[in-house]
Length: 546
Image 1 (cartoon, one colour):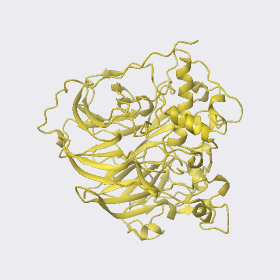
Image 2 (cartoon, helix red, strand yellow):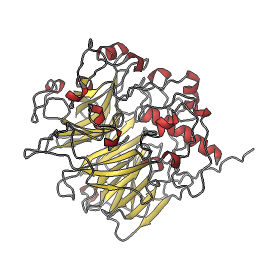
Image 3 (cartoon, rainbow, N blue to C red):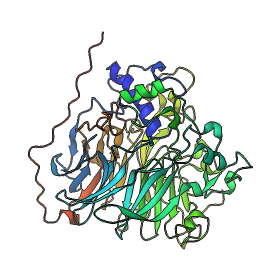
Image 4 (cartoon, rainbow, N blue to C red):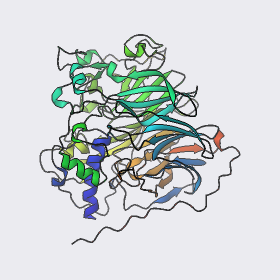
C-alpha cells in the first residue's frame, strides 16, 4: 500500500497543480515524506480500496437515471438507480461532460487529441451533438495555438452554445497589463474568455458574442502600466496579480510526471502557472440574461452580463445591468478585491456553480461544490500549499485538516434584482443558506473536479469527483442513494498519454447528472439494462514490498 500512497501524494500535487490552483511545489515531490495511513482513515481521496458500485438505494431515492461517463473513456452512459447501464452513446474521443436535451439529443465536450500548447487540465477543443441513437449531428472544433475550449459549456434556449476558452497572452502583453514579470510563466498567461457559438450544422459554427476577462483587470503593482489602481476601489474588476505564483519545475520533473500519468501531455516547465483563473463551470440564466462562472484559481463565483454587445462587453457600462462586461457579482473570496482576509473566505477551489431553477426549493439561489476548505486556521490554505512548504512535512491528509462541502447561497439583490455591493464593500451573503458536510467532516473530501445540483423535490445530487462518488442527499443531510463509479477504460491519446492527468484517480468523475424519470427525452424509450454490461475495472493488487 505504501506505493499507492506515495503515488497518491504525488498525483494530488501534480494533478491539481496543472488542473487547479497552480500554487504548488517549490520542492521536488519525491523528497516529501508520506506517512502510512491507518486502515480506519476514510479520506483516501482516490478511494482505491473502497467498495464500488451501488452502495445505497433507499425507497426515498428520487426515481430517475444518472448521466455520467466511464473514466478515461469515450462513451456517455445513462444508468438506472440499481447501478445498471441502460443506454450508451459511443463517441470517437475522450469526454467528461455531456448534456441531455428534451428530444433525446446530447451535446458532449470532447478532447481533441491533437491540440497544441494548452496544459491546464480539463482540455477539450471539440463540442459535438448526437442523436439518441448516436448519430453525429454537429461537430465544432475550437483548438489552435491561440485558443482552446475547456471544462464546460452551456446550451442557451435559442440553441446557441456558451463555452469557456483559454486565450494566449504573451509575457510582453502580461507585463503591459501590469502583471508582475517575476510571477509570469515563460510562455505567458492563459486568461479565460467566453464565446457564444451559433452552430452551422453539420460542421463548424459562428462566434456571435464574446467576453474576455483580460478586458476587466486591475493591478496595483506598476503605476506605469495599464489597469493601475487601488484594488479595493474596483470590486468589479479582476486583480491580475492575485494568486500570482509560478511553480518552478525542471524538464526532468515534468517528463517524469508525464510518464507516471500525473501531468498532461502538453505540460512544460514554462507553462506551469499559465492557467491563471481556471474557470471550470459555466451556466446561463435566461430570465436574467446573465452568465455565472466558477473560477477555481480565484476561489470565486463570478456573474457577468450577457445582455451587453461584444463591444460593450469590453468596457464597464451598458447592458441591462449597467456595468458592461465588468463583474456584476462575485462571491467566495473578498480578499481578491481588497476586502477581508482568510477568515472571510467561503470558497476554496470550488466547482460547478448553478442557479436553482424556478419551481425548485431555493429557486434563485446558487449551489456550488467547495473542494478545498481548510480547518488549519491559516497554517496551510490548502493541500497544494502544504505540499509546497519549504520544510519537510507529514502528508497525512487528516493532519492537513482539509475537507469539502456543498453550499447553497443567496446573492443579495435589491428590489430591482440588482446585486448589492454592501456598505462594507463586499458582495453578500456572509454565510451560505444551506450546506452539506460529512458528519465527521473529513470523510467527505474531493480536492478537485466534483459537482452539485438541486433536484425538484428539494434533495441535492452531489458528485464527489476524485473518488467517483455520486449521491443524493436530503435537506437534512441524509443519503438516500449512493453509487461509486466502477469503470475505467484507459483511453489513450495518439502519443500514448492519458487524455487528462490520471495518476491513481482512475475512477474520478468530473460530474454526474440526475435525470428525472419524467424527463421529456425518456418518453417512449425502453430503458432496460444493456447486455452485456460494461466491464467493471478491478484494481490489480499492490506489488509486494521488497
